[in-house]
Structure formats: structure tokens, C-alpha cells
Image (tube, rainbow, N blue to C red; front, side):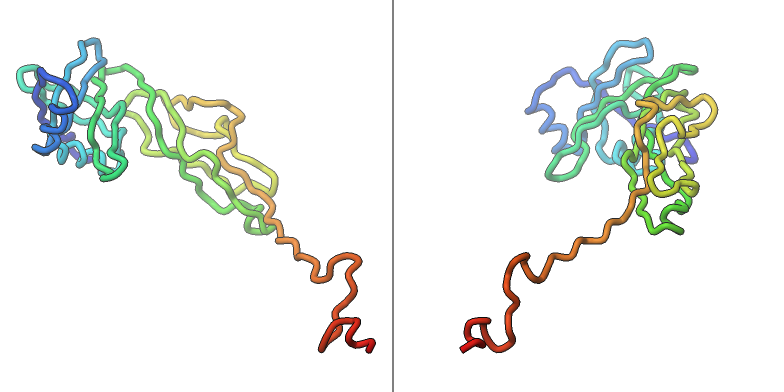
Length: 213
């Protein structure tokens, strides 16, 4: 996002399913804001404004300003969100206040680059096992993705979490030997035998007994 977006919110005093339904009917959703050394605050904000943030290139990792009426403005980012399984719409959000210099854990996608030599020369197939990883970093320097060059992989070789280069100030979390991607052999399907072992061959025009008559 070229400019930091500001989303307006209002404190909510009541909770419960009925209140949440009324909010959603009015185009708003419940939002809880916490972290940053302050107390948790239950608010409500426009679904359209929050959905617009999620549609940006940085998605849930986007830093934006939340202006809570009577409380002031804080830099926040999505910590968790709930999506309706039927409509696919955002129905609840947890936002985390950000403090300058504080590192937080977030999830970023892993993008593979290059064509493995094992695919190009040996007819293997590239499989990506892990598509996103958790990183610890200052939100302001969070990468949109981690690019991993797989062009040097031969058949049977793998790229692991320990091989990822995330950039200065970014720590990748996860099992060091966890496989991100590997090049595997493409097996030819085995052809089924057309004649079962021990079975007599069929004679054109009828069975073996009929031809002997």
C-alpha cells in the first residue's frame, strides 16, 4: 500500500451473537484490539474497510491505522480473523497494536523460483510441500514473501526451511530440516498383463474348446 490506510472504529459495550448479527446486518463486524502494552478493547468497524485491507498485496500482514472514537489512533495489523464458511466473508477480526521496535510473529508465503535441473534434464517433478512459513520480525520490515531458488535441485534433492534466505532482521521459524520442496521421480504407470498367468489364450472366433471340435 503506497499510503497507510486509516480504518475508523467505535467501542462496543455489549457482546453476544444477537449483537454481532445486528452489526453485520449494518455492514460492520466485531473487532478486538489488543497488545502493545494496552488493554484489550472491543470495537466494531466497517466490513468494507477491513476487507479492502485484506485485498492489498500484503494482505493480513498489512500495517494500517485504526482510529477508535474516543480512544485515539494506533498502528495495527491482523492477528487473527474468522471467515464465514458459506459466504466467504470476514465476520470477526483480532487486531494487534504495534509498538515501534517490537518484533512479532507472522506468516508469509514461500515462492519458488527457477526450474530445477532435475526437472529440466532428468524428467523429474517439482513438488512444493510447504507454501508458507512463520517469521519473526519488525512488522515494518516484514517481507511480502520469501523467494527460494530451486534451479539447482536434482532428482531426489530437497529444499529445507534451513535453506531459506529471509533477509536482514527476519527470523524464519519452524523445523530446520522440514522440506519446503523436492524433486521426485515421475513413475510410469505399470501396464496390467493382458493374459493372466496360467490362463489359456483365447482363439479368434471362439473358445479353445470350440475350435477343437
